[in-house]
Amino acid sequence: MKTLILKSTVVSAVFASTALLATTAIAQEHQWTFQTSAQAGDNFFPIEEAWADRVNELSGGRIEITVVPVGTVVAHNETLDAVGAGILQGHITDPSYFSGKDPAFAMLGNLVGAWSAPEQMFDYMENGGGKALFNELVNPYGLQFLGASATGVEAFLSTKPLHGVADLDGLKLRAPEGMVQEVFAAAGAAPVNLPGSEVYTALEKGVIDAADYTVFSTNHAQGMHEFANYPIYPGFHSMPVIEVSLNKVIYDGLSEDLQEILNDSVSVFARDMVGQLDEQNEIAVSEAEADPKITVINWSNEERAAFRGIAKTQWANWADRSEMAGKAYESVTTYLVSAGLLAE
Image (tube, rainbow, N blue to C red):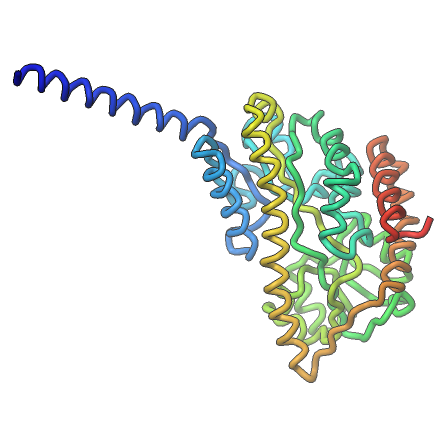
């Protein structure tokens, strides 16, 4: 009898051990590293980590994603190649970094003046053909586009009151090279090159009148409004897309349920990020509006449309620079016209 009990115990232990190994194997079915363009201290880095945790939970542990900060594995503008080569399995980044490979990355990554709210861009991606077009762009590089998020429409820093397009005439402002500078120049402003690290000092010393920098809450936390005390919020010019993509070979090898989990998870992540950052912005705006030295300005829909019309002339210039850029131009402008955001 003791022998039988002993054998039964051993068999049970073997089955338990086998079940544990099987569970561990399932949990470790897919282990990926995604590099983000965010720094570890950025307010949206924890939101990206929460997305990875959510995917792990929804997949029953079959997918485990580690999100690493910018520069951890490769430089910020090298993740496209790294994901395609399998050095990274995915990235969460601004597509504009890859505009040197194809101008379409700039047009889909940050089409200056196009969006007045993240929801407009989300609707374009999901219902206006944006997601299919993005995959047409990145698939040849070995990536599968899962979806897009955003940090929201960037605020605009100014030391002078700006109530519309006419007030941009002659304005000396900091703006990144490329499409952003070209659009502001077309609107009559005088854009200059300055790294982000020099924006505070340049505003303080009057070297520039205004700056395209980042979202309102970050500007406020960094003390920018001490000098740029006429901020425009919500902004009218820039809303960088945050692309979430996975190595295409990996994606194509996944079961349909895991593909669906990934695609759906990015939609939730996008709205989660916008929602949390909007809350932070609203708190900062309330603090700014309570300060008698700061005047927060909100452009009318008419002035936003006027700026978008000027921006469109520069989009057309970029559309001629590659076949995919031309497709992006036609796709986005068609959507904007159909949504009543742009005149034909």
